Image (cartoon, rainbow, N blue to C red; front, side, top):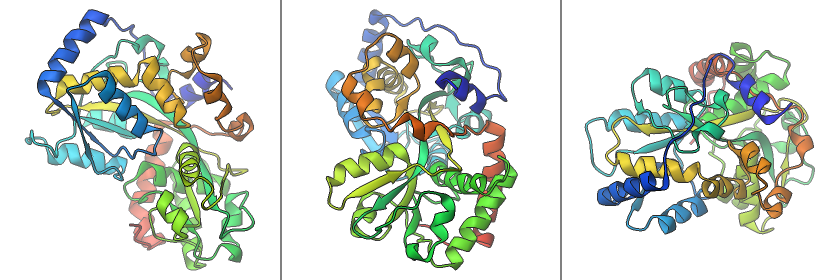
Length: 368
């Protein structure tokens, strides 16, 4: 199945139509001048080792000097980003985010709640129609699959599938990369575990995932600590469930100390699309638009690819042969994506509702 077709499956509940971008170099020059006058861009939930964001932010600042990037709470989840917009509706200070990068399900809901504003970047036409809001309120940015990151100094035998995580070998070892009550990455991880049990995508997979993690917690294998590169290195979370691009970036940053494996499970392989949007109440709307122009330019898209993420304009970049071979060689093997499932928006919403409502009662672990 091609990338475009798989993305179409992910958002099949929405009929979208693409509109070609119209921005010119002159338009971008004017936008830069207006953004420079604002002087700042406020981002949120962008860890530097997530999708290569450290280098992406540096690239933006180099290309557009005079615009300070104020980075809020790098470890926040998608739900936290939405809350930050709501909490700062009447605040034009440094705690009000201009832009958000959230899980696919949060885009339409933020639009429905009147929390984001429309803007179509100049490369709009090359973003697949099925991965963007027709009116420009949100648009897909990149995707990856959920995988296991393993500290090889502690775990000698890699788990190959979700069921393996129940083994006594992995006592006090398995962690999520977020709070499953608020973070998209963790919510979809629980859903993936449910799918691996044979449940249907949606409410069933959410409930099955909760049952799986409830049992994992009772066995003493689940660690209620938010996993990241530091906790993996310290041995606090020897097995981390996270997006493949995060795990690959963490592995690269650890430079073999400790050695780390990244395993795509044999079943329950869930792929997730993240989306960008501009806050309706953005204190720096022109800087926000310029940021979007950068992210969706070839330079910005290749920046994400360098961070092991598949950018949303991947097919366009590949067709024009502008992707350096070294970036292609660094991607995970294509076979790891063969069984990937892209849950629809409705399926994600139903699963998310079950997980958020049932986590405390079924699993009872306060992840932090």
